[in-house]
Length: 166
Image 1 (cartoon, rainbow, N blue to C red):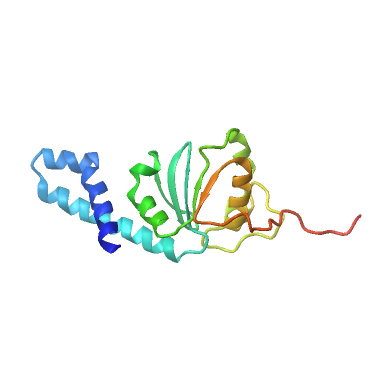
Image 2: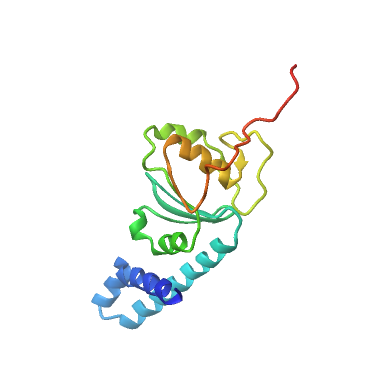
């Protein structure tokens, strides 16, 4: 598996336009140095994502993003096929949420934020509250998102707090 991960990351680094341009201009050593730095950087993101609670990969209209810490992301405007680190993480079992199939994109604005690498807020979770990944995934799935590597059917969503009648 390690070989496959390195192979995918190296192929993406070699294919990046800036590295190809360095190769074309005869600066092969500089291109190789930058490719190795890119692979090391992506390996660090992969390591952090695999050890952070509620880390996940998302894809939508804005591209593909790896959420691996509080306010820490690795993003690409491209589709999942163009982001090797995200593909590797999904293959390793990190949850993936694809919101591309959601018909009404404005409904996504009402979803809570995911408490990646931090404690979630107390329920109820509104659009600016931090909720557990399972709650976010359950709500996104109800809107039509595709969820991979996370079982959301079994999640009992807690969206309101039981309060006595006023």
